[in-house]
Image (tube, rainbow, N blue to C red; front, side):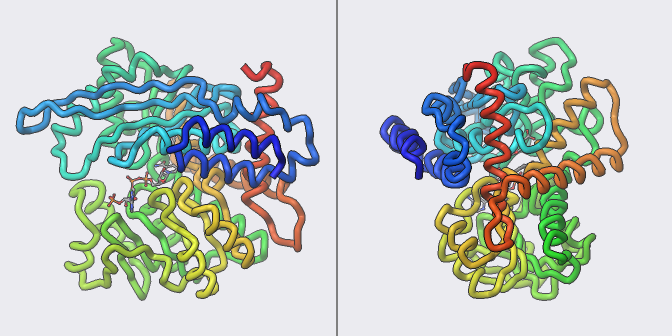
Length: 447
Ligand code: NDP
Ligand code: 2IT
């Protein structure tokens, strides 16, 4: 690695020794842009690189809320405002017990390059809380969201910082957060948050966008090598927003979905998930907030407790749950089973050694900052509609989403080094995102 890149990583490790996920995300980007920087000394500037890894601002705050037993509980809330060189801060909120500064800094860092790839003027941020929505009543979730917004509203706005959903934050939470923001400001500013319900300023297709966008992206990858999705066997991890709509689009395209998962383990459907199964899983996850294990039992289907899906033989693997859910041993199992393509629906689901192993064995690999960018891109389209005071038809949003995913694919090709005829999507995506943000920072005096 170039000494300047190595030196920035070393400094990060020294200053924040426990932020492993953040170090991992920076290492992944530095590894991918290294060769490009060797040939483009304009970007080998230590202060530019240091500015890229240092958030513009971090807000950490107390979130007190009263549970159903009348007890006051306290969680920690965060907003990492990472980079506004190309647009207002933009990125989701995550509610999960594992949320800490390292996780949110890695997510905000990824978001910088992802948002640059969307072709839209979006800066980067990420936030959330170490709150666990599992097992909480609807009233508890509402009180928590309202209390979180009582602090967050000071720091966000339609032209400054626009949150959205992520793990544990879906339509219900976005509604409660937006409602409290509107009340505190006494102002209807719909563009302050995305992923809203259609009745109060949401965009058609935002719910579907990340999963659908992922499938549009892999369709491009396959088309590039003269192949297609029809008849492919696909393993998906996760069973939340991204996984559900990736599965739905795959069924539309004639592929066979062999698995979904949650933190309890993996559902295996040997003959492929049916539309009816998927609809009841959506109901289970989005309304009843139930577990896949019980669902599998009720439907007499195989469930591998506490296991990931990657031992199942498949043509395509789509990790759509969380970070580091596909590690070296999982990659080896996929390689042994002749998996052809791995594309990230989640953020940083593959560990760095897993990525290296996949690429070494010519498995096509798409990093999340390219392949899952459809979600935030459609959030950008939601912001545009809010500014216009108008709603576009679903077909129009869907067509724009597809066009954006095709453009991201084309940009990956532009910046992929030509080695042995295969496309290096990791290099292509990272360099394309890096160049856009770095150019904007240089033009503005780094700030
Ligand atoms: P959801 O909360 O809707 O679903 C998350 C899914 O992942 C659930 O099935 C959950 O299982 C599982 N999961 C979460 N944490 C773990 C864990 N530690 N181990 C095993 N399984 C886990 O979130 P999303 O679908 O929105 O997000 C999934 C991923 O996609 C995340 O990495 C997110 O950052 C990324 N992403 C999301 C976008 C969006 O628009 N929503 C856009 C781009 C990326 P369980 O319920 O048991 O916890
Ligand atoms: O990781 C992501 O890109 C998201 N969770 C979506 C962010 C957004 O602002 O729509």
